[in-house]
Image (cartoon, rainbow, N blue to C red; front, top):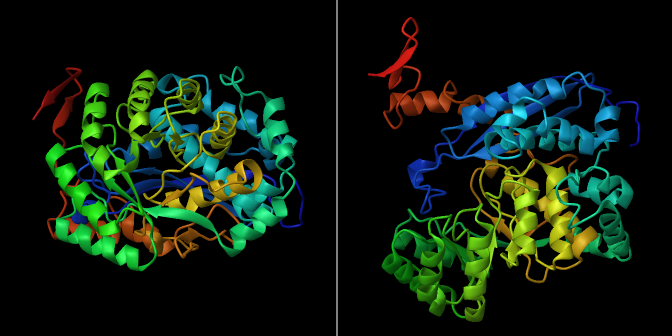
Length: 468
């Protein structure tokens, strides 16, 4: 770790804020399981003993975001007050300290609300490290010696599939040609696909208009949501395939709607529209169910993709071992931040499964571009069968949003992890006191939680809870 005169030495404090955007009003993000998402994030700032700060976030879709905020506050003592040299000198140990805090881990471990909170903190720590080194995150990762990068990963529970020595060997094998691949990412970028026309709550007219608009911009890969109604899915897939033609790619996403047998039967009905993959066909925890679906659909030329809500590297290990996925979809916030994500990329490399990150949301596009660019330069050296999700909304709230040119993510040039938001946006959309939320409550578009009585009141003397 290089030391500069401006380099901070310790973390002196943090803030975490509940930021929410009212995306449900336009059905943005709607799917078969989540019809009314309000894209949100627990937004963390790490303060140091200099002016350098670390920004990180964890994505949610509205209610429940306050739980992640509370979990971040509970985990804060693990890192606040610590020296940066201790944190980054044993980053795997820091990660384990957060995920294995002796009492907090009981409400995990390494899953759910607690892991989302870990991700927000870890993402902020990586942003801080990259800022200290004056590099965008992808460049920080690319420039690390293989031994140093691998030292940031906690291999507990996955050493039966991938050892430290194997991971180091993989990275060393890919050293030749890194400069050429880096130049390509800077000049051309990484290929993307769009979900922007595919939300389930959109009307046929809106879908058709958006598809034509995206095609005019050069997009060749499109994903739509499915899973609520079979006949409607067939109708929508037929419309999309007719508009985009046979030479462009269609993917479909059920967002965990089906059981195993239902997924197989439903996708056989959609097979004539030639989807490249079915994403999240069933429960994200059902490894063997995914394997059964994948085996049944491969003869039809349909792959299985999952990972958006895959809770940790252990589930990914099993999905890969069981040949249950054809496309590995990491999420920058569902896993416990960059450290754990690096482990999944390296396991996917060993099993020859392409990684195609889930994005969209709040800040996910900004983050996954760094990860996938690192993968191309340092791990896979290929964009074959690999593509990154792209959704255009909410980027105006970020100081350095992702840049897409000719349907490719361009390698970020600004130091950090690209998730710093404008203070004006934070003030406007902090829930429930931000100016935009006050306006929506006044207009009656949302129920005001500050004045609405809770459905339950506690009778402290009786020690019971009674419904109103």
